[in-house]
Length: 387
Ligand SMILES: Cc1cc2nc3c(=O)[nH]c(=O)nc-3n(C[C@H](O)[C@H](O)[C@H](O)COP(=O)(O)O)c2cc1C
Image (cartoon, rainbow, N blue to C red; front, side, top):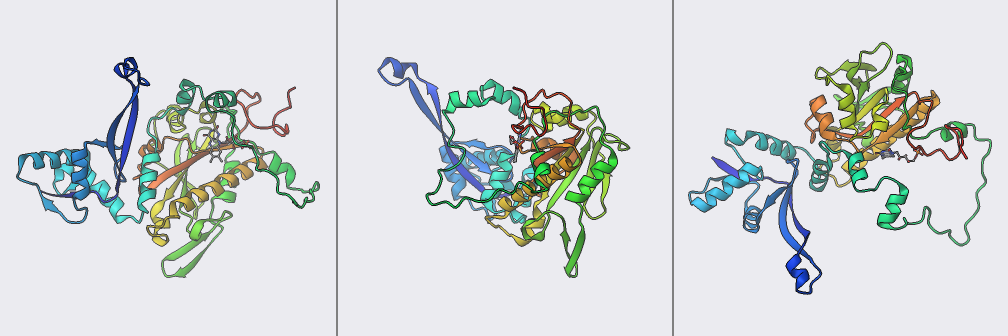
């Protein structure tokens, strides 16, 4: 059996505070800090705790050259423990899963720090609403009592600033102002298929394509995309759409069609609740759109590029704004959130996250008649102003 170190990893020193009664009784602060190390690897979904000796050993181990399992018992034991954690990879089939995941990151063109960031900012089983409630960080008042007042809502004015005219006759203004993140959907009212189709056509459908070289095609869409690569895909969770059986579908941007996903979860309600990390105000939307990125498409051009991941998240922002606009124009509510359990989407869609991973979830649907969850509508464009 041969082994080598995983290529993309960082060591994170941790210091965990804990109550120290002896320290307090001997005149100290009562708080002491326990130091430890963890290794964060781009191919592993969770950090691995390591002791100092193993960490030093790992840092000295080659990530490029294979070496045989040492004969000396202590060294052998250390290698086997690091293989179990997946920080070392081996050609032994017993460790094939970690080796395949590591090879995938190795073969990809992720910029190392982005790969670490994306892998370790993915959530699995997070209940963000429950967490906020437990930490009493739900309202603005909670935030102020925990963190003090926020920085000012706008920077200070510049001396000599030139006042600009306001265009009160702007015909698009009414529609722009009618956009407000919807947190009150009527999940029982079906979205007509033509309305969903129109939205997808306006936002995500390829309007044309250009072939610059044989086999090199660029899509033209109504939204911009870094490098013209349009790496984002949309998976539609149809909860209540006329003439569409509830389930998961892939939206095909050139064919303008919904392709069923074979492994649709049996219980769509709990899937959506978990996908949206407990945000029940979004989970009732009749249509969700899971935005994923085919990273390989972007990394074909932006190879190991420090800006590539930032660019694809900006792409997702453009898609979500266009979804808001297209939904609002049809009288539908819309939302976007990045507070999602990516792993839930990956399991349902059968994705390898470092090749194609979820970035955000949008949703659209009819608004409820009653506002139960807060929305930001101070102009009263969506809800009657209550005094
Ligand atoms: C990137 C992004 C992530 C967001 N995530 C959440 C979220 O997790 N939960 C939520 O209720 N709203 C979320 N929102 C909606 C914002 O809270 C909302 O845009 C903001 O309150 C302003 O309200 P408006 O969109 O109605 O103008 C998100 C918006 C953006 C752009």
